[in-house]
Image (cartoon, rainbow, N blue to C red):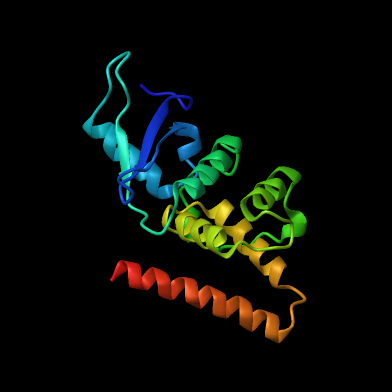
Length: 178
């Protein structure tokens, strides 16, 4: 029987030279996708005492190891909070306004973006893609709130530049995927 402090290995298979992350099972509970993959892997392979745990492959071609590291750092910090319940899929998503984000999470976004009011487009894009794909609702909600807060008070011209930059990044990714 496994405990919440048992660790699992996660590898982004879309990056052949990428890192393998070691994360506690409790931290993985934030992600509906990883929780499901972990349950499937556990059914297929129960490591014996002292045996290394199974590595769970994920495929996120537009997400860097650095972004995954940020996500797993967040999940490990909050591993005992924000637990998903059986009705999570049916609940309305309420986005968290940055004014209600605690100091630790604010520091998390500042480290990711390099500032409090500046958005690092690539980093936030990767974070939103990964948290949406991995179904990490609390972090996704906070990221959307952080982006909305950064957009607040911008002129239409500034918003156009932000959207044009996001569209350029999306076009680059579409070219890579083709």
